[in-house]
Structure formats: C-alpha cells, structure tokens
Image 1 (cartoon, rainbow, N blue to C red):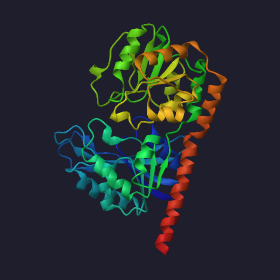
Image 2 (spheres, helix red, strand yellow):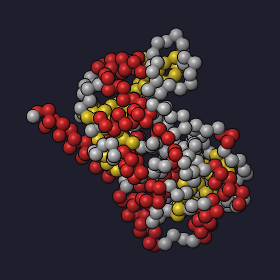
Image 3 (cartoon, one colour):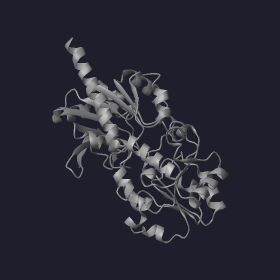
Image 4 (cartoon, helix red, strand yellow):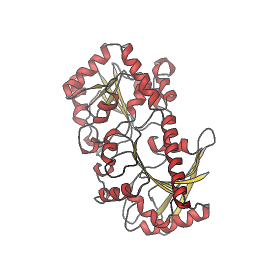
Length: 385
C-alpha cells in the first residue's frame, strides 16, 4: 500500500470527527502516519524527540500517530508553523520517515501552517482537506491566510467540508471538490429508539424536555441565544455535551436549567442523543461560522430527532428541507416549541432518509479514493512522458 502522511492541527484522540472518520476508512488502502502538532513535555533537560503510537480499530486497521515532544520553553502550546521549532521538527520527522521506510508519500494537510514540511518531503501527491476556515478562528496565526493561499495553489486535490468553503477555495484551485462531512448512520440510528439505552445519570435528574447539543463549545456558540432559551422557558433543560475551548468557561451562561456535561466519547454519544427531545445547532453568525457546515446535523438526523438551527448558510442550503432554521432568538424558541408539539411528517422523514443515504462516510471515502487514484495515475503518466 502507498504511504499517506497527514499533517493536522487536531489530536487524533480528541473529538472523533472528520479527520478520524475519513482516515480510519482510508487506512485499509494506505499506510497512514498522522502527524500532530508538537506536544510540550515537563522535562526541560530532554531534547526534542519524535513520540508515536499506533491506533487500531476493531477490525485491526491501524493508523500511526506521531508528534514531536519538546520542553515547555515558557509556553503552553506550540503549533505546526512555530518558527522556533519548525526546523527541528522537519529534521526529526525526516529521520523518522526514513526509519519507517516512507519515501515519496501522498501528503494530506488539515492545516496550511504545516506546509513547511514539504521542505523535507518529496510527495507523490498533495491533498488539502479544508474542514474549517481556520483563519477565522479565535487566536489564529496572522500568517495562516497567506499560507493557505500558497497551499491551495500547490495542492493537486482540494476537498472541502462544506458548500461555503467550496465556493471560496474553488477560486484558487480548479481541482476543488465538495465533500460535506458525512454520517455513520448505524451508529447514531441507535438513538432513534430511547428505550435502547438507559437514561444517563446526568439526564435522569432532569424534569422537562431535554434540548441537546454535542460538539466543541467555543467562540462559535451563541451564548446569548442559550441564555434567552433558558430564561424564557424554565421548564426546558439545555444539555450541552463537549469540551470548552478557546473561551473562558465563566463566560458561558449559567442557570439551573443549563447543564454542561463536558466531553463524551464518540461511542457514548448515542446514549445521550436518544434522550434529546430536540437537537440544537445554536451557533452565532460571525466570521468563525461563516463557512461552517456542522457534522452534527446528519448525526442528529440519523436518530430522527427534530433539529433547530440558527441560519448557518450550509445548514440552510444543504439541509433546509429537514432542519427548522430560525433567524432570531424568539423564532428559535418558537421553533423548539413547535418541534415539541408536532410529530414529524412523513414528507420530512423521506427527506431525512434521502439526505442520509447521500452523505455517508463510506460513500464519501469511496469517491475521494477514486479522485486520488485518478490523480496518481495522471501523475505517473506525466512522469513517464
């Protein structure tokens, strides 16, 4: 199998999302090395080194995970594009790849800030999978936008995780393809029948309808909307499951009917989703959400939960036939009330099934694989000529 080296700003063992869903499936076709950002160690005397481990799925398919471990140097975080560590990381990774026998791999980027690794690689193909508009995120490097333009121009293939991202990136690379994030239907369909799971302890204490969300809680969250929902309907219970990142937890609204349950594993999510009465997509409209295409939309849908969302462009464009989109906080509350009072129509259920069948991770990986193979064959033909 060919080698596939992936550079990511996300940890493999963080929230199970697009990179893990795609790469765990591609691991049956490629030998995958997932290269994370540097990990800071507590030992100031130990020089930087490459640390790695192997992740296995239940079928024995594996992904190798590697990252450089470095002394703290007075900092709590070091990214891929850090000027002080980039040369060291390149050198260590080059030696590691040589030890592993990895030569001329396919190279896959999730962050443009890692493109400097191309200095020590001779890639057979360069792929950029754009899952977010990273330059719009809180704390993003000012260099990120220029780095992305460079990567878009050199990439052989560009995949985008949403319609807005596709429209934006297509301008700089004609080999850009739209692949909205998908869904593992069987996993989340377990939640369609609440009796499948015992009610989690945290939910068993709650009286009244459960309005649920799972995912990262960060600057994209409309905290004012959450507060409005909680204060206008004290009998509704807001349950938010996920890690709090890049914002002060103290800035989140607090109320007796708002419950932050922290991160749960991917395997556990159906247990909680099964007991959501309404599933929420409560994102603010800001620069960080302008290109957002929430994966959770399809995951909620697979459990046949009524979904209420703020007017995120991709949600409206791709899933408007199923999701109730509310333009204002009052309209959002009204949409929740309607979802609680009205059973789903047969027409909406048919639309759900149509969308779910179109956006499965297996189908997405199959189509991506076809594009990769065609590009590799084209590259070989060009070299031979």
